[in-house]
Amino acid sequence: MRSVRLGLAVLAVTALVAAGCGGGGDDGATPQAPAATAASGDAVNLKGVCPDTVVVQTDWDPESEYGVYYHLLGPNPKIDTKKKLVSGPLVAGGKDTGVRLEVRTGGPSIGFEPVSSQMYKDPSITLGQVSTDESIRFSAKQATLAVMAPMEISPFMIMWDPATYPQFNTIADIGKTDTKVLYFEGDTYMAYLTGTGVLKKAQVDGSYDGKPGNFVAAGGKVAQAGFATSEPYIYQNEVKQWGKPVKYALVNEAGYPFYPQALAIRAADKAKLAPCLKKLVPIVQRAQVDFLANPQQTNALVLNLVKQYNDGWVYTPGLADYAISKMRSDFVKNGSDQTLGNFDTARVQRMIDIVTPIFTAQNQPPKAGLKPDDIATNEFIDPSIGVGA
Image (cartoon, rainbow, N blue to C red):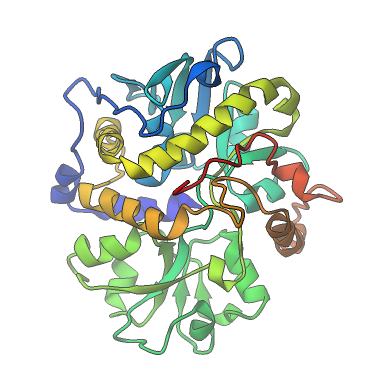
């Protein structure tokens, strides 16, 4: 799903690439600040409990939305520019946990392979970023179990030019017109939006490849999919041919409440990893809170990784700061019980109900009788950890 952003990155001007090359020195090492909230004692000792190297597979290039994992890396992480990964001591609250962390890049670096599939191809991966709809899609043959949701709300959105369409406030408003909506072919939420009549099938166009050319050429007369943590900033500040605000509505608000890029294991690994997850998941919960409170050095590492990997992905300091601001205000939230990272069973069931007929029609039926606890668990969540707690 992140691949819509590749074209936008490749199209960016050289000056933006240079602007996005902040961070550490020539050796690629960027010291990380201790977490703001320190865990203590045996709670942060993962040696002999977790794998010697905990491997996290992301679904895209480095960016602030995934900063929680980079925030867990200790000082002077090792960057492998060929394999597009970074590794170092796994640190919690400024303390070495006794194991290492390896964060791998996804998207183009793994041939746009879904993370679920990549996890089954490569058993060295401990955890991967798997959104709820993807977990349902692969539940029959490549089952994953989400153990934490770093973001409560997905930033998936549809945007438009407010000067052209001042009457639009929701995605349903777009559907009341014949306005063309550009999106990336294969995104499951669009099948939901058209299947429920929020948008008309005749008005959606799956040719969007992440490049801003069509939106700009249309003078704002089309709407376009994207991410609320990036495109609004990019179009106003980095797409010189546009250079003005856009307005957007979230897919979540249209009734598609999936958990984006949840942290997941292979379902069959639960018993083996349970002792590790009991300690590791609260560490990740705290790291997300601490990262958003003190993002500067971690963002510097993210920017430096983009520079070191040099694979066409563009990420600028301004965009990184914007993403943090939007995550704080809109997307990294506590659940209804004031806990960060846990799953609402009814919400997961709603997603099963929505996408099962979609995937079945695509000849990829989910596991028969799939239940919420087949794809998500709160067993390892620390309910006392939350944003503002």
